[in-house]
Image 1 (cartoon, helix red, strand yellow):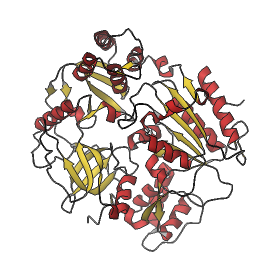
Image 2: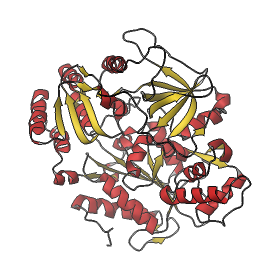
Image 3: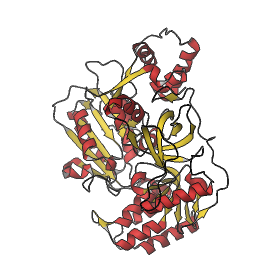
Image 4: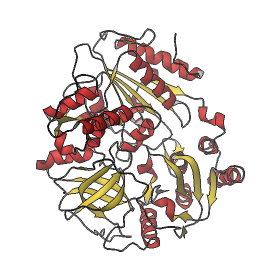
Length: 508
């Protein structure tokens, strides 16, 4: 058979063969780059699992490229274009914006599950612009859009293939060209789902309603969803529908973080043995640091990872105190975590607007300052393709013990936020940061409890997920101390798009 122009390991090659067989049944022949009618209407679900560094993303990227070369259209969730009778479709999805952005940074055109479940409805005149950008129509003449604006839209689309980003570059706001959102009615063909360990049962059922052919990529060593029955959805599949990747590709480059992560699989390894391994690694490789205290400067963009909520709240208050943040307002540059949307059912469109722009539960956000209306905030949403948004916000600063959260300011309804200087390891799943600080006293506390989940000591699962969030540097913090910041909070590192979008009312 003809594989993509890269070197597969034996287990990747076996997985590729199995995937090719499944796709052939669905009417996509990767060997000869041919599209045919599906052989049956039967649902087909396959899982590709493996630990960090085993080559899941490499396989997913190669599969995406091969499907595109075979003529399968990639659906981004931004805009789908004209439907053809013989059209075959593919979507690459992740549960969160951050996880999707990790894939996009590696050249895989991923979007969130939410953006596929709910699709935008475009104003007809701007639909013509979208068709032109996608090569499905002639350059349009739109009242209010100059040739210069259209040229900016064209240049933006060539760079990132995002219709909303291109229209924003032309000077439009979301409310100008998106008139609403609707639940997807038409199914797609093939879905590739990354970080599928994060899926809950409802999301899995929704995906099966949309995709006759569904492929789940996940790490069985991660933590199951908080609200799940205790397992991961791919664990419910029969063994013959599960492909396991064993070889650790990234270890070839001598990655000490991955070496530590995979050492946790040793059943005889105790917490103190593991901490000595970290100490030894730190002596020989600058990518691992035994830190005596938490660095406040890093917390502004990369939250400290903890196990216990009490630890998280204490660190948040220590962070705010270190930057002299007043109790009754936020400073520009403070990190937030979206905790959901508080809107009544009659405002369903506004909810979908916010969620579509990345303000879903768990989204990492930076506060840019107050909006022009009371209760509005200007925000930078990490991982979103158009990251800056102005939205009605409810910000809660949690207190220690049973005290009610303090709310420095709030709209009557809108997106709700908790402080994001520290997050639980559960909520960090699917995200990656250049540098990660892991609060080791919490991992030690978990080891002392002796809890076991899915046959694995809880402390090992926590440590595995926490340290594999680090892309370049792991800081293992051994003492409950906070270093003073070296500089003030800033938003200078967060570039703004040509026209920030306003989604919950006219904040002008």
